[in-house]
Image 1 (cartoon, one colour):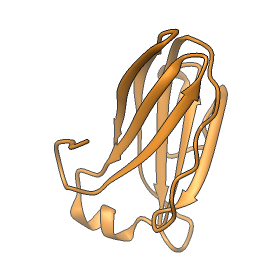
Image 2 (image 1 turned 180 degrees about the horizontal axis):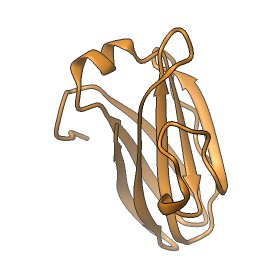
Image 3 (image 1 turned 90 degrees about the horizontal axis):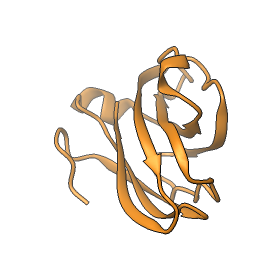
Image 4 (image 1 turned 60 degrees about the horizontal axis):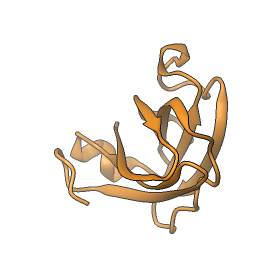
Length: 117
């Protein structure tokens, strides 16, 4: 999967009742990409509730991983409308980028879901 912006993309696979989805995270800034040590990705009930950079609100599923690790699967999520929220932190645990994108998960479908930080 190729996304616009800087070429650093992390991919997750979200599987379960809603089908199978590739989840991509891209960084628009090369310096942020280089500084990112950890990423938290969450399926949340709504993007409008999020304060970017803060802990996710209304979390349905969440994973956190180092950028040099293989990302874990998010697990099962029921079909519906959600937000795909991600935030990246540096080596000192400071949040350096965050983003949230509204998504719709449909039963039995497959799609690519992306969020840009």
